Length: 386
Image (cartoon, rainbow, N blue to C red; front, top):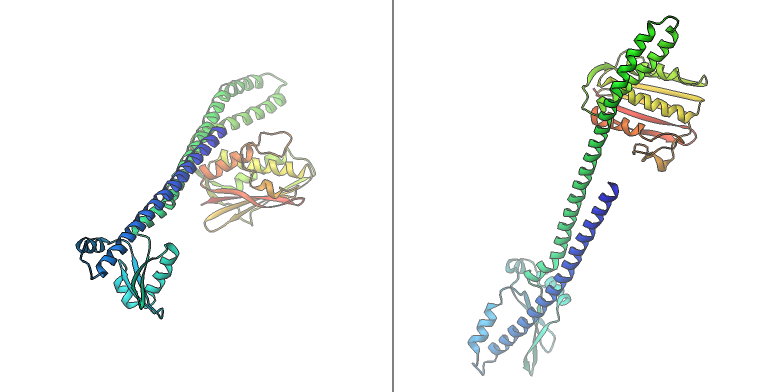
């Protein structure tokens, strides 16, 4: 699935890059073609000006006047150069209001036009020597063609981004459905044998001298029933109810303590609060606390301190699970909630992934690594809204 998504994204990127590259080359071709056409138009326009200025002949005068008047898009600045190189400016197709109000407007435009095109000269007199130089700039059409690749690049980028986001959303949705389906199927498959085992436990209780054995088996069956219930709730949207967080955490600490070694110290600090209510799904919330406590036990490797701190804040309940274990490297902090990531020799790397899903999707809270330092320990934080 990931490989298909990656290949699809790569194909889209290549396609978008090909479109943009082709557009840039074609736009460059069009810009050059338009520039060549405008240069010919300018040469024709200057020739028309020559005809108009030649008072000795009226040949094609009407045509020249028509050609001169029809230029309504090419911006032109006329520079008159005489014997003393005195320059006076005339202009066409520029902002006349700005030219009158801003004394530097024409000079700035002249500098801009000099960078864009070579001027076209028209000799007026040989003696005294007088020449008109016509500097011209790009038309609106040519500027639009030049900017078109940038617009196309933005559009292609937006298209690619939207497509990738849509694919990613679809991929996440598929994964979520897969998680839910697997959880429901697991709960369904466990349901029948667990129910059967409960019946056999009741039968075993009626047999004399099996009280201790039936009691231990019943505990394991109850544990299986709890796991089945958890998977059933993972596969559907759980019902949240108001529960005492201090009580829920205490129950899980007591459960873990019975399975921890004598050199492990697990303590709870609720800042003197006896009851801290919050909206939770008890089986799923317990599962998260159990996962965090088990991870803490693995981190301290049979010896050390695990502290659970609960703070009743104004709008949130904050739960910190801190251990004095080996810590998490900076490179791995961002990966701890990814499916399949684990540093243990045994394990599927799904505990923290499930915990994140339970807290963020079902409880609308957050869970993250608050702090970790190698050789000193790690703190995971859960934030629940009240």
